[in-house]
Length: 286
Image (cartoon, rainbow, N blue to C red; front, side, top):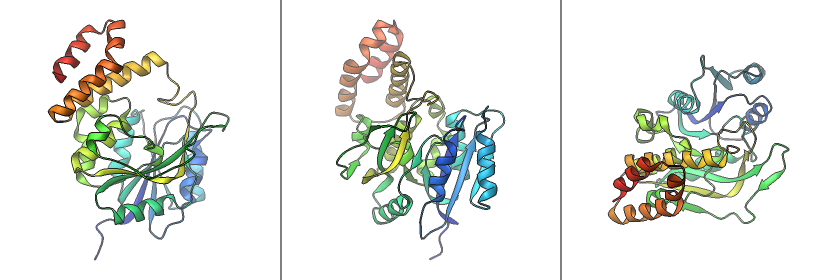
């Protein structure tokens, strides 16, 4: 049967000011050993350093392998991500930001093999090693085991080892329709809400393979990893509110979400006088 997809996997990488890291990311994409076609799409978001030149040099060195999509002016991470994913021709999309990279040359092959044999999965992730700016290991799970999360579990915040640098998702309309959701462009932890949306729209699961195949880097330029704790908390609350306003859930789930808000976020909202926001959240969940 002829496949409607010209390639099996589209690697979608977004990057901004990653001159110290992007070559390692690209090399980890190029080292993938697969029995299928792979395309590499890199969304370069008007960096102010040498990121674009490094990607162009790689694309020149490996003709036909890397597509550089250079944005002018800067789009921002979510719009960059959506633009690149919209261009993807693969049956599956593998994501990895330009400051992260892959460890296993068989990562894509293992994930495709898994999703081809598990039709109830919309996303397949792997365990990730976390390193700091000096390449020192900050975290790595000592005993990886298979994990799976359905939509209700993810709604309650269960999503360990599903970092974006490890993620492969089915390139299907139900998932890609997220680009039409205006609320998505206001998210901070956009990858969390992307995974939730994919599970919600398809009623399929997010699976995690029991191997460390990806690497996530903590550094000062990281969008999420190194920001001030108060700012991070306020962004988490903003995303929580977008979630409860734009997803559906049962009465039992609503009670659990209300309890989660009381335990995690209410005191913060009150301390920083976000009284109206707190009232709106409570009203949504009552």
